[in-house]
Length: 146
Image (cartoon, rainbow, N blue to C red; front, side, top):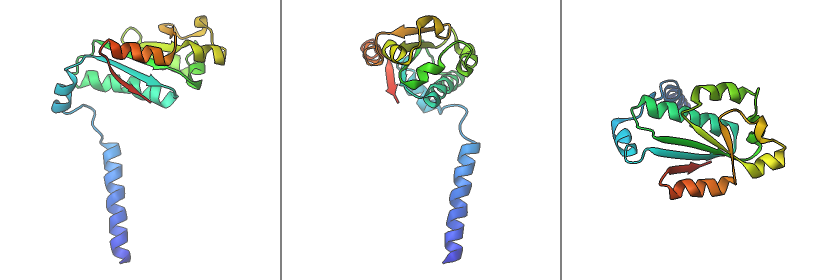
């Protein structure tokens, strides 16, 4: 009985470790084919990890051969305080400038005391997070919110 539990745990650990270590760098051809139907993507995020994750997804889509005509991240919440000049996220965003649009919720900016001139160059205030997501959906974007 103890040996069975041990083998199950070892198998589970091996599976999880292998899937994390050797995860896909590119998407499967069937996924790429499906994603080619719409080339506009928008993501609503409110946490740093989601912001970074969505930037990484952009790389994965492009590396997989997915055509990306428009890619926008709309940001709200406390992470807005990190989207300022001189921040770690400014260094990360340099790679994506001109490729990925970032809209920053002006309501969050006001609440957190972040002015437009403090934002990372290339990022623009939007009326509200919700209104911008709705606008992008109306324009036919694939949208995901976190």
